[in-house]
Length: 145
Image (cartoon, rainbow, N blue to C red; front, top):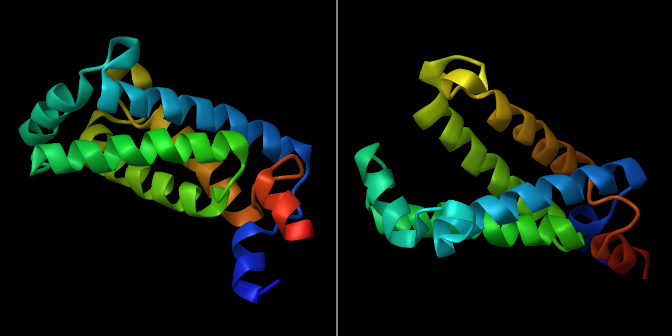
């Protein structure tokens, strides 16, 4: 296996990171489905695009597609543990944008729409980015071949 493939898919992490990866993935897949499809009470693509425009992220439709797609498909990637590091990188970037464009001015706590939850998710995505997908993952199975 090439060094690049091993660095993307390989993991020495155990089952704890697998649990973290799956739960964080579920949150992102659900959140992305709100943006893209309007599931779980979300605004769908049109509503998300309008909101993105209103906070200065233009063009709104493109920003909604990029953020919603990254969250939905990145979340699915984390859930199954396939290409988890690239997914975690995209999700980390999305979280940084959310923190600095939406939440930072409200302080830390969620009760004030602060960045507390996004920061916790960022910790989870960075852990996957650094350690890999964990033992129970498709990445790990491919890397062991």
